[in-house]
Amino acid sequence: MMSPCHVILSIVLLVCTTTLSLSQSTPQDFLEVHNQARAEVGVGPMSWNHTLEAYAQSYANGRIPECKLEHSMGPYGENLAEGYGTKGSDYVKYWLTEKPNYDPGSNSCVHGECRHYAQIVCRNCIHLGCAIVKCNNNGLMFVICSYSPPGN
Image (cartoon, rainbow, N blue to C red):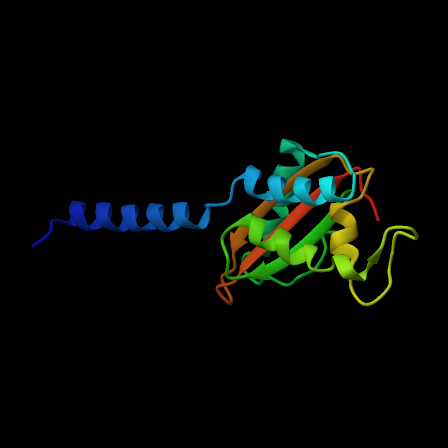
């Protein structure tokens, strides 16, 4: 029979392991895919910004109870997503599927949604910060990337 201390330790380890598995995304996961897409269209790379990351994390943390895809209406450009993946790169790749709908000449959407893609390749946007959290109400992951200066 396990002592109460062993039971508590087991629970703490389980919680820590679960938290670590949800935090598999690194800044590089987000940044690498953004910069690959930007390079393909001749736009310079972004750099990771800890202020933007903190802003994104704060907003994402506030969405945990009920993860509705609602923009923060804050001072930065923003992309949002939700899904079951834990890697930031998967969400950026999803936003990149909008590329065929984007007309670079007019910087506008020609067939359907392209605003997420346009935000990724925005020439003026040079700083990036993202966050990912698990939602309490549906088990999905909520993802936010913030861009500065804001574009599109």
